[in-house]
Amino acid sequence: MAFQNILVEQKERIACITLNRETKMNALNQATLAELNEAFTQAFTNENIGGIIITGTGSKAFVAGGDISEFAALDEHAASEMARDAHNKVFNLIENGNKPVVAAVNGFALGGGLELAMACHIRVASSNAKLGLPEVTLGLIPGYGGTQRLTRLVGKGRALEMMMTADMITAEEAYRYGLINHVVSADELLPKAEEILQKILLRAPLAVAAVITAANAASRQDVNGFETEILEFGKCFATTDMKEGVSAFLEKRKPAFKGL
Image (cartoon, rainbow, N blue to C red; front, top):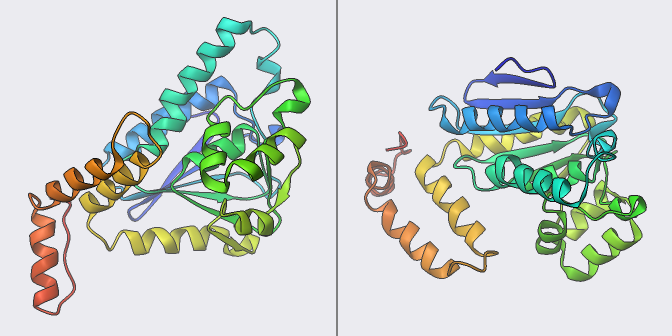
């Protein structure tokens, strides 16, 4: 599909997906969510892509939230279906993807924007970033996984305070909370995200995917995370990359992983 609301560029083995609605503070409308589904699905299945960065156009906002103008016409059933559809097609898709996704948070990451960042595996923020879940100021709560992922990342007490007060926090506060992995200047934001991915790309791709699967299992109630780890560990022994990694270690050379 031809994208109208996002930009997708590939630099070597890294795909960069950029929210491109700067006049709307990169707000997530339904059309943008559909494009994100398509872009991430393509990136996860493209053998030439090893990792993904998601960011927003301009310096003011990563994503300032959902597009509130679309909410007015929704009733209870329609709102629930909208949230469920977004969970499955975008937020859970990203979190459960087989390749690492780094959020490069430039400016405001509010509501659905913070929820999008939290669905990613790693978060880097510019020093001017502001983060929050202000939905209660609209008589709402987060609907794209915010109540769950924020609680897992920063703990119940901090998460409840952020969501019930609707207060924004700075990038430095988010770093102290464990919500952000790194805080850098605006000029260093994308280079830092690329640096992280370039390091990951040196590792065995199937093992990286297995790490994502096992780590995600830690917060699921329907599976045993330890058993998931055991099974993923065992699966690694059926890969060519594992044999290459062990041989390289024993031969004191750098491994040449092929994702096989």
